[in-house]
Image (cartoon, rainbow, N blue to C red; front, side, top):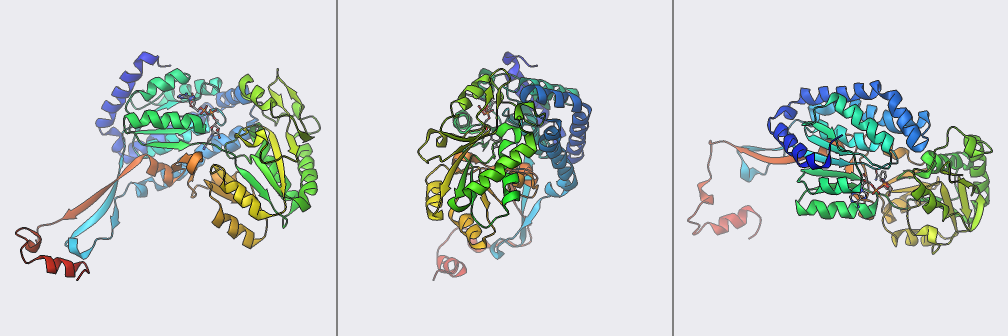
Length: 460
Ligand code: NAD
């Protein structure tokens, strides 16, 4: 672990290393990505244990929702990197001929990656894949709230990378604030909207560009033309995965009145199937990350509790809970819930749903369950969100060809796959000319030349 007073020194050593040019070599980058994958495989057991200790994360979810995403990203990146790094030839207007135009991707320099605690391994290392691929040095600051995972990230990284290339700085808010005093070439932050604003303000002091992967209240609209059983299963899975502590979890349900009761019954059936009669005994159900978040969530356990509501502070357990007959003005509709509590609002008129969504901060995800093609088209056209998943939840974020990120309050910038490479690259615009032909008419003195210029550019 690096002491706080050494932060400035680490950044400056990384900058020196960057200027050696070592990271510009594409085969070097590919080798580091392979090393990263091998190190994760080597520490697989410790990673699983850390995530179990922090969140009681089931091993299946450690692999399915953390490690597999990194492995896929590494494989995909290695496969395409030689193409991504190539200069892209661009169209050139005849007035610049003879010549050629290009976009040259180049690394930014030293990046800072700040991670959250909910998928603490994946969300710290997935951006790193992009940073390495694009040829940067990087400092990772994992979340101190998922302390065990933070330690194991440090172990994995320090095992394979010299600190002047990639390193981990562990610590809490003060450590992040100290890091933010340094000048970075990019800051990639995943966390809440409130902290995102702090990060952007600090980054502005150095004019450092930021990617902000934030949160928000992602609505889940369930209209009438659906397969009830499949919809219920997919909503239940997306909401209660990691005990609801997923940035793109359906935050609340908007259900058409005519099917509400059937849907709630089907969700109750899915919950029983997933976690049994007593979810506290299920090995597949996660725990709340901390006492602070547990206390925050317990405050929501009121109103018309349709299902669940049980909790245990010693185990940081909150049962999958459904709160029925919620109104837009209820306190549970103010902030992102980020826990296993699902408020249900019923509707009859989809116009009201669209208006209500549009008057709220733009969400990270929006879910719509319906086979009605017209309604699908209308929701896509008339609402704005980071991403949309129709007739399923969460899975859109696993599609490598779909950049992932928010809009408005839910974030700035997108990553995953090629988009990650782009985040950590500067696309340098390059015009190449030769000495074959030089249009002297462009140079002073200009007398008598303006009509010709106007004719050339279509202005009489
Ligand atoms: P957070 O914003 O509290 O913390 C994230 C990071 O910021 C941590 O490393 C923390 O140390 C640091 N931090 C906290 N307070 C700070 C401060 N005052 N100054 C400087 N740094 C500070 O977020 P969290 O609680 O770890 O995660 C939950 C939030 O993250 C939710 O809102 C969730 O939706 C969002 N999230 C978004 C994504 C995404 O991909 N868009 C993914 C996961 C989580």
